[in-house]
Image 1 (cartoon, rainbow, N blue to C red):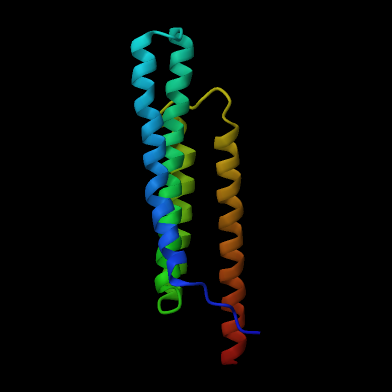
Image 2: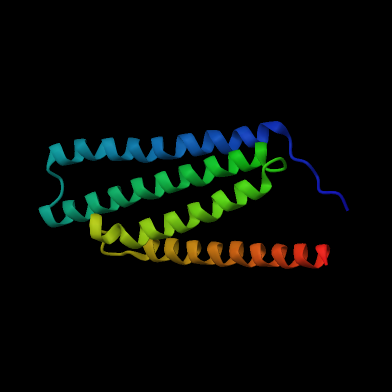
Length: 145
């Protein structure tokens, strides 16, 4: 059965969502200046809110790169499949390393459930990518025997 090809505008949708995602987080971040000027929160609560906003910005940037990669894969996937798979694997490892080192750079929110879910999701994605890589490598070896 032949795989159904998606319409061209679908790839542009990846790009638009990837670009608009960090802007929405940035707009929320700008609202926090108004709340701080009003003095609505205690210093402890304010530190927690800032940590949540900073982590939201990190997630927005991570999603930007995910959607940007999906856009690239949509348009150049068939022509440069091996290069994009390698780039995707390296990107996943870089994102996992960055998330592991993130608590050393900035404070995480007290409820760091999203951080743990991000780590688990990246680990599952890396395991899947490596499984597919070794499966394809095994199929290539059998093909050339």
